[in-house]
Length: 67
Image (cartoon, rainbow, N blue to C red):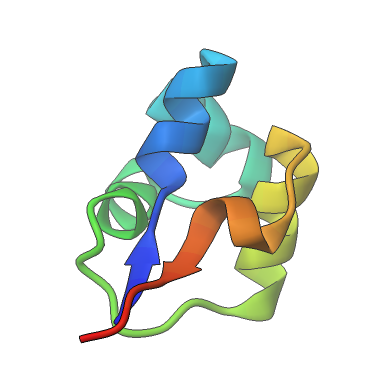
């Protein structure tokens, strides 16, 4: 199972959802869905923007846990 750790990364960096959404060009609702794991896919362009803004690697945001 792929787990999203976006909320953890945002908290560590003190980034608010509204600010991050604005900076990467997503709506608050769409970023909230990503943050809470209510998605089944993520575009590489979105992942790229998240990593750029949060100054992190994709592995900081995504992790794999065996089912």
